[in-house]
Image (cartoon, rainbow, N blue to C red; front, side):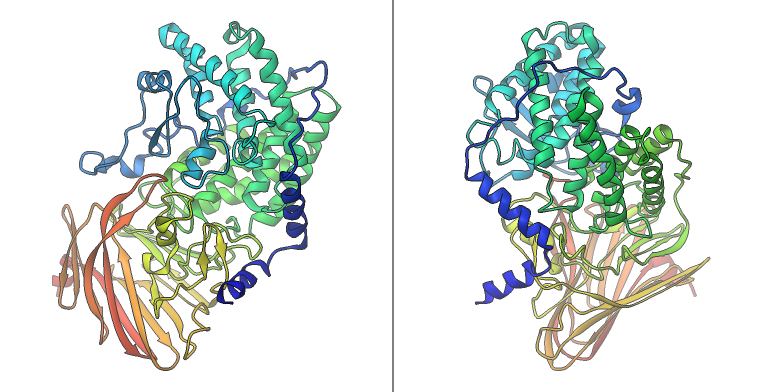
Length: 611
């Protein structure tokens, strides 16, 4: 019965159309797949946008190089497990051995035959579906265009793996529909295939021979299948990526049906812009990383649909999202990891902002923001000054009908001090139904407070959310030298005594960060709170709190509140998908009578010693 109640709390928010499409696709999956009919003659359009290939790359191992890892540059020398980007020769050597590397993990898939991990995988699902995006094919094409011996090797490998994938991952092959022909994967792959085809040009494809025909046939089949299997059951960023895939295919092929794909893409792109992008410019799934992903998809759509009525509205959508992103960056240039996300899941904010300026001619100031701003629809209060950058989560967990990327992190925050991250979100290791996924989403892993060992929102399985915390009484004030934001939430209303958590976060004129937690309600409750440290900081526990150090910076955290025991416990940090780093969590626990108030003051030792 408890599971039935949780399921009801989860599914009652779904839209009728989601029920319809989920049932339709579930019934269809029980029947053998039938490949779409390919026209006798396929014609590639001659007006493919020249600037399309320069759209900032998503999920590309090549793009996840020095720039995308900027937030970890200072840690490479002393953090085990942080990977350097693969050099071209190492990349080619691995593929010669049948090894694929992305999302910080290498898998040996063999060469004869290649194990494309077909079927409904129960582990490493994100790694597998990323394999089927084919960013590796785009990178091979880039190496081909550079010529020389590496170019010849890359040409051979590209033809081998593309041909093998087309044969072994055909739609009619058992297990291909699970991930290889997942609509999101198809849409992403279409983009890479269209770009690499035009990047190589006629000379770069001179050795393709029969591969040319099977490549174009497969590309057509993928686009046709996608057009009939848009993810109306999931919606959100998945549906938008499907629209991008249709736009790529509509720009690539000539003919009535591709024209229809393009028209559908233009119509849905504008609708999804209105649905998914909030009035303050944030993305409605409330994930900073997915904000960049979606922003990049709108950039692609604006480029591909530039000569349609959709072009200008999409540019304006991108502009609003860019202004939000300009605020939602730590001093290291990367986003806070609110809800699901990792630094290697999207282009860097700098690349995303520059891409729109270069490709759309949209004038957005890319410089770091200063001062404070509340994004009331997204639900984030941001503050930037020479000492602190703070991002405070005061919003809903996500859209009610699609909260799949939600963490139970209401009233959590991230902060940087003098340009270095200090209090961080746990991040996301992978999208599997396992202990790491449960931990990454749990309230007790975030920089907030758990009451009676409960999560503020009822996160379960991989992407499910039952009961949701609702923000209440959001307040904000910021001036040239101070910042103050406050909010509460309803996530613990179901517990005995109806406890409620209210938090005030402020940076005062002296530069002290103050966190005030008020726990309302009745009765005695177990309270656990914590602050996850970036691994670059060392810590020690004091009777009244903690002292943390990084280089010349020393911060003292004073815990003011009776009945709480401070500790510094080993913890895990997942700043990138597939990457786990050891760190510490400054934790406090106790059983106290409600109502209860506690305060944590975070001040530099220099500030504390100043009269």
